[in-house]
Length: 179
Image (cartoon, rainbow, N blue to C red; front, side):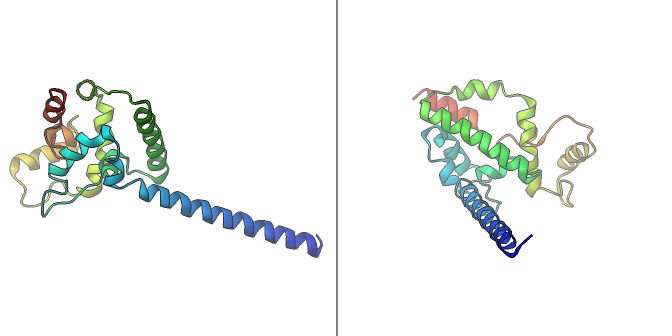
């Protein structure tokens, strides 16, 4: 391999490296900007979810508790590849629904959701709530969490903590429908 060929190979590697850096930074910027609560609430379809989240235990209306963003609960936290693929898949779905102006029956979706949808939120809950049997918790909670930790129950976090993310969402959906 001559000097000219070596220079071309080095230049080619540098160009590939710079393109990879540019694409990585662009992707990171897009992921960050589309992971804010304000971005998620920017579509009319999501307003009810923003309103109920805002008043919930993890919303911005409460003091002294963890504030959760939409992506903290609604995207998996068991690997960056899964996270990015699901973020893209859900984003494309939500955008398609938004531009088609399709009216969604949120109450029907709520009633017919499958257990795997509820399980999808587990990694979000567990990202923050690592120690479920911490000293000082009530005995009832200790027993329930112990069964969960030992795999002796099919219940998941939102089986018991239904109002943690959006308060009484079903009530809010029904109220919005009747207006």
